[in-house]
Figure 1: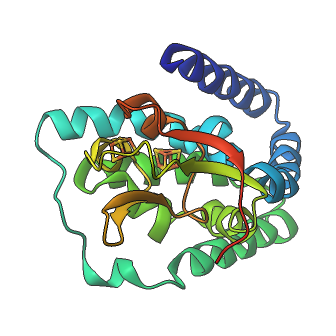
Figure 2: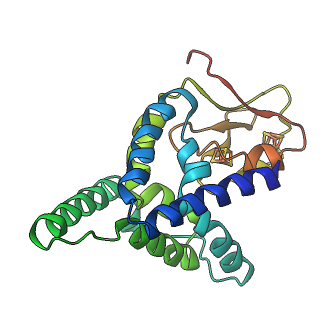
Length: 212
Ligand code: SF4
Ligand code: SF4
């Protein structure tokens, strides 16, 4: 499962590199646009499997964690909810300006790949995913309405917390009086790291039940 997930990410990264080299970035942006209605149905699959920023961040983050470079806390300004929207507005404005005024295509996605990789050298990945990424801002907006998502079977959960540790998006926590794991759907990348880590097979991608 883990190997299959990695292969899917590598395949999307190869496609991204191919389109970048061929100057067809518009096709990638089309794929991103199509991923938004997909997020309404199945959650943020783009973030979990297709996003080149995420795919590059994963090994960089693993290295930084192993070397002890990552801090547990992040500066307070990174908790501002509007930050990803500012990043999105600046990305769009600078891309349009460069295209219209300077007749050049800004390498906006490579820029954000570098920003993501640099961020995880110092901070945990959720800092970039939840507090910086402009693409994540849009995915979050659509993903929170997902009809299907990763969900925890509260009867099977033994509150071991392994899923919390495995999640790179800060999207699953032990909550409630029983300390059972609960997924925050808007933050969840549907990446399966939690279900792979779960010793009880308590996490699955399934239809959401109406909220009580
Ligand atoms: S909750 Fe699970 S599927 Fe969702 S982002 Fe975290 S590890 Fe991935
Ligand atoms: S890893 Fe599985 S059993 Fe452990 S807290 Fe998470 S959902 Fe529950």
